[in-house]
Image 1 (cartoon, rainbow, N blue to C red):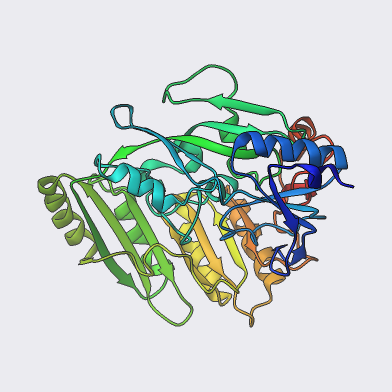
Image 2 (image 1 turned 90 degrees about the vertical axis):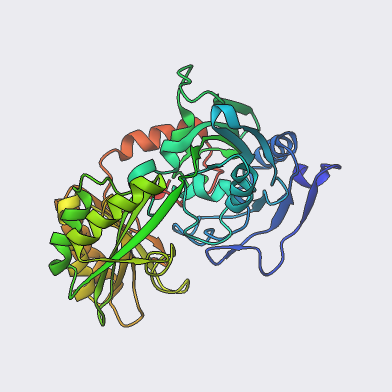
Length: 395
């Protein structure tokens, strides 16, 4: 009998047909309600040599390559509490399964927010840490990696650990929280995290301008990004069959924003809008493969033009050099990735397939620090029992 199934106080059941990870069915689903239960489950899984993949809301579980195995889905959806909010210190902590919207609701009464856009509806704290997904406001506030100041984790062998804490300028020990961000659950199970908060601005106004194509929008992007009015977001949306839209967000005091809006609107020939085009969502449909393309700011519009010429719908932060591109069925994804990977690499970035990569396509592409990443993986998870195969180089 598996040690995992003998844990009397933890919910462990056989997997159902819907319990899959990128199409790979699991054998068991374990649903802990505390870090101590996570630790007990991981010790038992370690003893049984079982592969574990963490899950919460599963909104982005199908991102990243399919794991090489999946014995147990560790369902963290019952760990969904906001643990602490210290308004005076601008910090909040929440369990991994807590929806981002619940965190925002908890801190909103104090006039604060966690400055991470909900790009994928229903995203949880754990999902955001696993994918490092952020939206338009990354231009002003950075990504999840910039905002997390501490994490509590459980290693593959069940050992519990903490890194950082509830002090923004915490300098004790290694900053493992940033290592967890973007690791797709391959290093340790994140059970909770501390984040720094920001005040909700008194006013926020979106401006919108259009151009015939991404290439012709370069001057608009350049003016917006380098403007002295300091935008909080500069978004681009480009489609093979339509105009290119540039959306600019200005935040601050009511008086200050009003003046800055006038200056930016005049410079771009823009009008005000309720939101960026497509609100804050990703381009395309959830069924389409999705690429993430990064580059120097100066190359964003040219790369967007290449993607549009290939037939892709592109949307993202022109002000941060991060684009997302949806690949329709009519496009050869391998050829598109090859072309965009070469162009983005030459521009100091990369192209990865976040979602829907065929098995014969390397979703991550070449990674210069792969040996270092492999060494880190071997330190944290020497038996490769945590989401094996999901990260770069098959880690």
